[in-house]
Length: 223
Image (cartoon, rainbow, N blue to C red; front, side):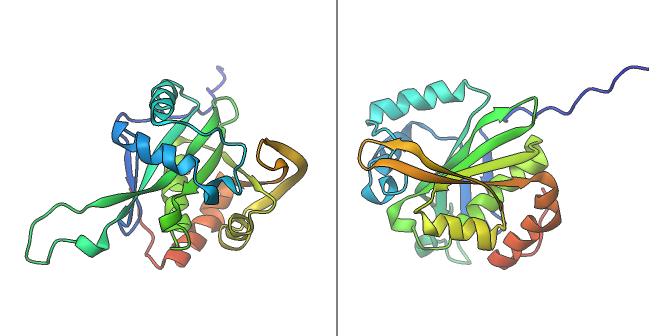
């Protein structure tokens, strides 16, 4: 009798594009035209308030990082776009639906042996407070758990980031797994306390997926 092979992560398709259930959100691999808005995002005060450890990058730095990460199978960076509902084609017109850059998301530290990764999100200031966190993470989770083969997703956030903590605990109902004092070093603010949360594949299937769909007010979908 031969031992069965352990499950493995599926490769990321070239040109990957993911849409939320209502097509309000689009996640796509970043391109050169996203370098400038991503550089601006990383230096924005509202972003650095809770992520002061992020190095400030120029457009050229972002381009180099994008090219390097595209070759790293442990990282999946995606740019976040939100549908421009103010300029939709009329019902009797045929036209392209436009999407606006609204932030970045993705995963890193993807582990082939343990089928685990860490996920994160940065929403551009103009789109903060507009209910994007749920459809963004729903779209990302659905791909990770149901297509990529991930078993466990970890989240780490500043202990002072009440909005993110509230979403993880009240909306996603993620499990708090640890609290670390002064875990992130910040040139701006000294040290940052961190909270760690996790969602397992069985939790995604059992309750998290349905909870996010209810929050979005959409019917369950399959790809």
